[in-house]
Image (cartoon, rainbow, N blue to C red; front, side, top):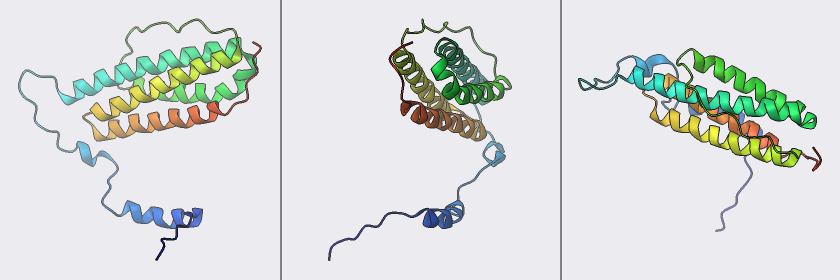
Length: 171
């Protein structure tokens, strides 16, 4: 008998979402209640997370500066990049609570055409998304790991939106 596949309806997804929450997933500080013991002489998990936060903050501020420069130079991209700028500012504010940014590189020169400038933004956003996801995988605190993963997902969503923009070739 052939297998019949049907599309998953929005209604089905919304009805099943609460059931997924009951499958044992946890959210909140319970993961951090009893930290694992660390060997003497090594960095504590909090120190590791502070370093991860500093790296994430540096990467976020780097990409935020690039996005701001592209928006200033290419007025046609300023509107679509406004949401990206707000996202990076919110992420930087959260990360600043956990770590100090290291001095990082300055953004590269902005290309003369809007199409190339947007391509540069998309590339740097992809790099930021990967850095945040990597930090989430290395974080000792479950709450901090979830925050970084959420930031990575937000960057991915913005990249998807930006990739669909119709961009002129002229500056």
